[in-house]
Figure (spheres, one colour):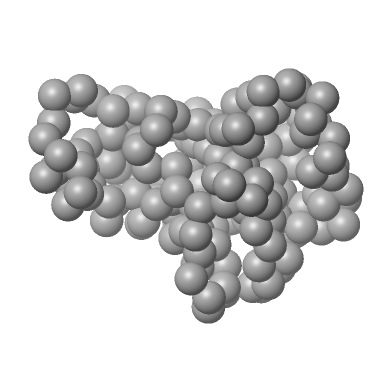
Length: 171
């Protein structure tokens, strides 16, 4: 697990590109954090870095948006799902088995339901007193935790953590 500070939206995008370089078919990425903490900025950049040319938008109201890049990618937002049983209708397990890369915003709500192997990236605001101008400009700092879980990531874990540590000062 790596913890470090991203200084701005540019850092968040660089992190997404870095993580994307280690993702493969059938991987699950869980994005956690409060509203406006950077999940969608990260997801857009990650999906774009995976070869998707179209504009990536938040799936908040449609729940799932599918893209084709180097692999099939499904961007899912489960913020509006209250009952974990409702996740069944999204067929996330089937998507993973079919080799799709699945990126879930608010994915901490599904932990334990989608298998033991996933990358969880958590964004936390460092200062709750930043201005709306800082937020809009993408200059508000975030504490980020990157945690690779399960046997699927064993070989990739050390390489990704080393790359993260080379870019950011890890706490």
